[in-house]
Length: 241
Image 1 (cartoon, rainbow, N blue to C red):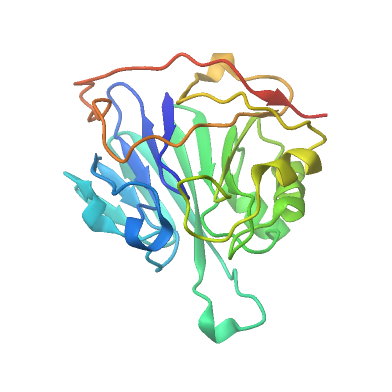
Image 2 (tube, rainbow, N blue to C red):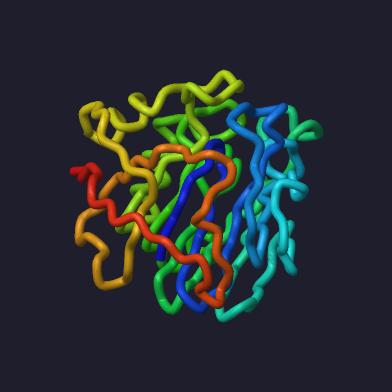
């Protein structure tokens, strides 16, 4: 599997002969970064906000999932778990859906704009999580301390931070460094353009992998028939503990 980050909460998940997924496509006018021009079989939306629901940024998709449920599309099993996600101003905050994508036993959880540490019932509904894509910069999503708490609850093999301050972001978010410190790590400049991972290559200890956000388009698009495939083989990351 290859996981590519396009900024904010938008990722593309690809695997040979399986459906390609794009998560939380954004409106660049709202959140920054370059306008997205992606292709996918499936698009998921965690909640109804311009930074997470801009379906016009994705072409070719046959399925858009915008809420909780269980789905099997292109041999990918998807579980959507709704969280209340509402803060003090409940009437102003949209509900959030967490998604778990099961690619032949390799599971990736996208936490959307999760605001609070999930309940035990929500954690159990997610099941085993190998890789978690988690907001760490506040601004409507988890802050660094809460994100670290969620990681300790889920005990994933790999953590990929999202939704934090970068040069391309317009929104006022906290830096990645705060999260790394909460995880007991030192700040580093090391990062990689994408993560290539398989179930057999998962680390035994939780590892934080920092991705560089990519341009909102590229030659790496591919559908589940495997056409136009191209992998990055990156191995950098940070071990927690």
